[in-house]
Length: 368
Image 1 (cartoon, rainbow, N blue to C red):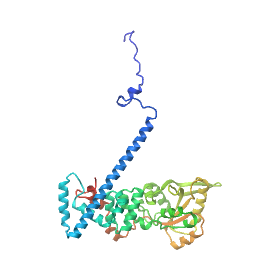
Image 2: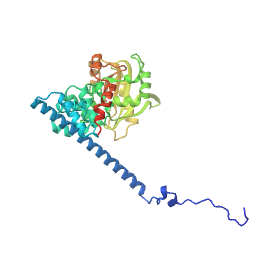
Image 3: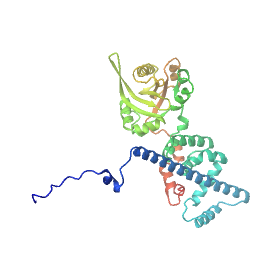
Image 4: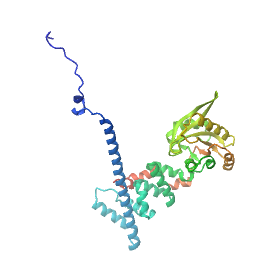
């Protein structure tokens, strides 16, 4: 190197030059504005998707209504559907949804929901595939309405909706023995009661019928996502074997949750055998300790749920009657208890997926 050559300097950072693609640097407040814009764009995309879905479902209902009306008035047989499918596919080759199978679903859909106002207000908010699950798996309008409302409220996927139907969520909701009417104010008592089920189906744990309490507890933590789904909307997992120190004595809660709608802690205790009234004394003590040591002043009263392998419902109701803490008692089942005749009469999730996912399928047809 020449003694007169200037030493090379490390390049200084230039915000304008270093910005992606040579863009100017972000001015103050730009990042927050960008986040806000992204949120607005995402919301607009969601609204557009919902609007397209609503129009699609309403179109399918109108086509199904027309098929029903013309078949009834003019005596057209079922073969007219094959002719209609051919002509519509010829007229709209880029549109999916006009297969003979899907046209038959449209007719069944219109027959199941004759009230156009209800279709517009409720089921048109569900994707077409969800509506097919309601048609295939449920026998009457009242149960379909209930599951449709829950699917909208909790934004269930099609598979989750199928699972909730197969595990008889409607029949189990609000069935636990509780004393909420005496220990909680309205409307919290109603919401709390509807938040509990009986029985709780824990067959996803992969345990045998004779599994002990600690094995069930450990498996629940390993499968906490599935357990939260079985508990229902609003439950958030806090911890397992949560320590309570009461004047130097240590006690451990099996499972602690927080319910976001009820705004309260929920203590869950597991008992591997049959329910005994003395179990409630221990659970009531835990609720007192959580109320004193854990809950925030703005939280509601802590609720206790005792999950037992089995229970005598009358004994549970008697035991709850004079307890001043909000408690519920329910069974849990470790194996699939769906009756065999019902299992064979209802399509499996895989069968539904095949029905909705094939070349001539309603699910694939349903894409806008």
